[in-house]
Image (cartoon, rainbow over all chains, first blue to last red; front, side, top):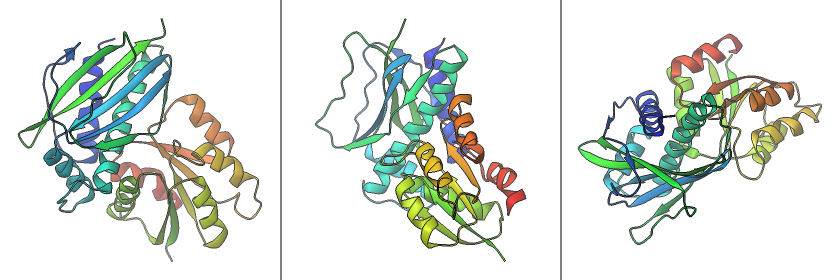
Length: 153
Length: 123
């Protein structure tokens, strides 16, 4: 299974369907690298055949633009609405990845997303987990969708 | 006369978007009630006249499947139709929802047209 391609297709579908935004995707990054300066990270845990987490890392300006487009209003600060909106983006991207993995015989259970605001934090994963990250461009700024996972096989 | 709709989702963003999709779909409704989980949803059903419920599955406190199960056990609300709106699309979980009375499911992400297609016949 091409995980990078699944992240690109799943993320682009969420944005085109829910926000009417056609995202530009960069090349998938396997292993380390590609980190963006993030002010908000929304993540959710994955369980069953694929264990790990999916995270969406956004600069504040991108997070506010996504939330504003979602809600049809101007968003001036990173507040609970922004945390909720980016969490829901992560949730829907994970849902699409779940479908992609299911087509390859892997069942995933999704946890409930949570969001963190700030700049002085890092997200970790299980030791030995694979990492695939894809940068996306919206309004000439970059945000990152990152999957850290371990296959049950 | 329009219908009263109950939206059940732990995401306030998603409740707003579903509500907006109902309006954009041109469906005839009077009131949109909101609940953040199954517990709140049951409270709304006990206290308001609700014609249709749209519910997420993955929620804290009481998820969509537990909500359906509890609703089915209450004679005064068990016949209110429910559609699931969720990222969960697996046959097993949607099958379980249907076995507990859900009429169908709309996959997130969705368009207003999809909402209209599924809910239009009920409105």
